[in-house]
Length: 483
Image 1 (cartoon, one colour):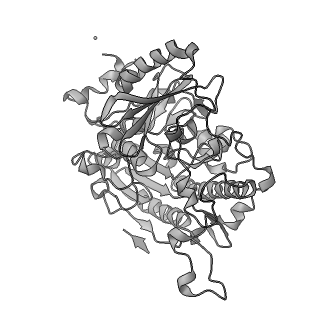
Image 2 (cartoon, one colour; image 1 turned 135 degrees about the vertical axis):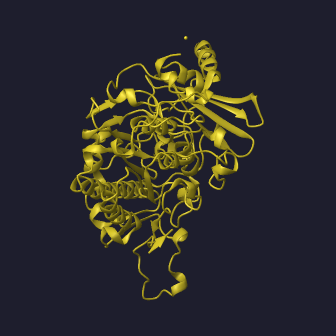
């Protein structure tokens, strides 16, 4: 069932913002296809990111065929703002999407989204699964209506002494489940099956395609077929090395893991008990492997249909996720664990296939990158920078910083800047950015886990002043540094 860039060379790419003419796009038949994988709550807990023990063979296969971006950052670590930013190529302060209820077309009614841009340039564009935030789809983005299969959340069956009304509703069920069910019982399995069928249909079309496939796991609840749980010995799964809050960080820098605590059996406050923490991480690992297997099915079908050689494949997780780090679970902050997310890209003819890049890239960069790879003009509103040059030279000079943000209520916003060595976060009054409430500074050379805020130490006063000046220059100054 279906529910429906005198200018530098790089800066010249952005002349579209001045209304200048751009080269005509190549004929549609010569353009590459785009296969666009979105994965919910996937942090870089993958084999291709050097994590031992995780079973992610299909994403790792894509990594060998493409490039892994070790330092890719979302613009806000929660679903809708992150996805909106990526799909519009505009940052949260432009989209005005900082929450889960605001649609970007309220502030940007005529913005051309990433898939919409491809549609307007002769592509057949289809989306299935979780792409935009659920309930806030954008019909202008697709050639045919967006679709997602309707599926049960849990395989749990009613016990002999339970009444129908006792069976948990979707939002009220457990935080994890090892269902003795086939892959296609849950939604991501259905999405994979629908994606396979869709690729067969796309093969027959004359126009190139932009095909967005969104997977919901490993988002809570951590439900997946039992065979994926069986891939792991929970005793060997490493627990968070820093299950405590950062020293001298402002109290509001982190939350209270509310998303997790909403599930039955989770403590209302305080630390998650060690045994439960291990089970939860086991469930996260199993869910990662489950989604990896579904991605593998789609990649296999792409090969079977002879489409791989002319298809750009991009895979991203919408933000990171804490698995007990800083004594927290879930996302909703500016820490490295939440803002750093997986990004892999494979493109026909790229020179550095199988390589990693440590360039600082941002999710707003994905839109201009895919457009450039397809030979499309760049819309005027884009706030990112195409990282296409990195596909041939992953170690070339690049942006000096990446920028994220996260609000705390209606009165406070934390703006975070990640440089090569530091994370620098400035908390301001949302109505008066000149009013600084707190500053965080973490040195990734000596403190990669961001355990100690050193912003207030007297020996770092000059460094804080330097970073503050850089932060005030913002993303535009960082983008313009790329030549």
